[in-house]
Amino acid sequence: MGAQQVADRFTELYGTQPEGVWAAPGRVNLIGEHTDYNDGFVMPFALPHRTVAAVSRRDDGILRLHSADVAGGVVELRLDGLAPQSDRTWAAYPAGVAWALREAGHAVTGADVHLSSTVPTGAGLSSSAALEVVIALALNDLYDLGLQRWRLARLCQRAENVYVGAPTGIMDQTASSCCEQGQALFLDTRDLSQRQIPFDLAAEGLRLLVVDTQVKHAHSGGEYGKRRAGCEKGAALLGVDALRDIPYAELDAALARLGDEEEIVRLVRHVVTEDHRVERVVDLLHRGETRAIGPVLTEGHTSLRDDFRISCPELDLVVDTALAAGALGARMTGGGFGGSAIVLTESAEVDTLTKATEKAFAAAGFTTPRVFEAVPSPGAHRAL
Ligand code: ADP
Ligand code: MG
Image 1 (cartoon, helix red, strand yellow):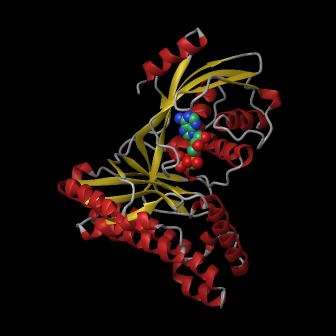
Image 2 (image 1 turned 90 degrees about the horizontal axis):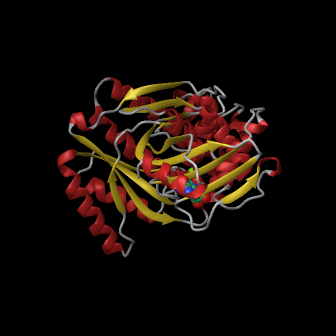
Image 3 (image 1 turned 135 degrees about the vertical axis):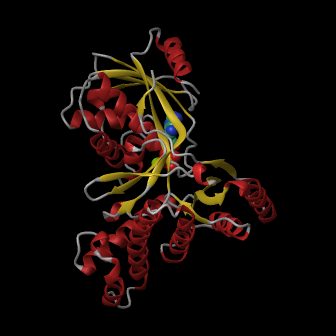
């Protein structure tokens, strides 16, 4: 779906041409899972899948929203009537961004929006952040707000946490907003300091596959909250602001101090080892040892499955099948309980792995997964 098509559809809907067209991508997280609400490290990169929005300003306090991906017509909202958690529909995401900008004192006086996306929703690839960030960037440009990318990400997170009412960390919005083509983003979620890490797999004869299991387990929201609360309890018991403050070298001593808090021990162990895995991956990529990140990814999966306990049979099957068929490494990615897994493989093995996965899913009676290649793509930008 091209920017011009989205602009043309805007013109059909609203009777004028849009002032501009913007795009923001979905993301996949290479390593660093459930670390972002523990002030830790993450390492996402942007997908070629993106949300494209044609937008014009209005000066009458009205927000009109239309998505090509949702049945129903144009949604019309009054900006001064926006209230957190008052809207359970998709429109809460873009409305929440306008709300967050206005709350922060920015003079946004209305907009007409038409958007269309190739980011699958609910697949753990962050269609929600792509939607928020594309709106934030469009309003930032149109209203000349001069906000930096990390700041837009923060406002989008606030839109999702407070306005939509979905607790999420800062990774997704920062990835969509700040990623660059051919790079993975090494992000410290405590202070949002970031480093672009060259990540050109094709040049090394490698591929990263995303396997979308198309499974979404209903309890994922509540389980996320429980893990988050458990991590906060662990930090409190250990007397630190966040689990990020437990150095890897002191993990065993910290776990010993937690005594028989078995559940908390597991959560803390995952978060602290996962932060360490991000640092190991950064280090390996710097040294050009890309193939060696495979086992680190797989260790991450084991930790998410056994310690954090957020995997599911479909995700485990992707990982087990891929490894048995010769993948360099594999792990679930995203929030868990469904969604997608990633598989690092030699380019020549892509077909073998894809077929093995499809066969294993058929044998288990699971829905055929969607498999595609993830190429590190540009972050949010103006497209027209
Ligand atoms: P994820 O971010 O993993 O895809 P979420 O549950 O966080 O899953 O966000 C998905 C929700 O975001 C959808 O249910 C919908 O409300 C909204 N959304 C995402 N993309 C679009 C789109 N193109 N059009 C309308 N709503 C969208
Ligand atoms: Mg989301």
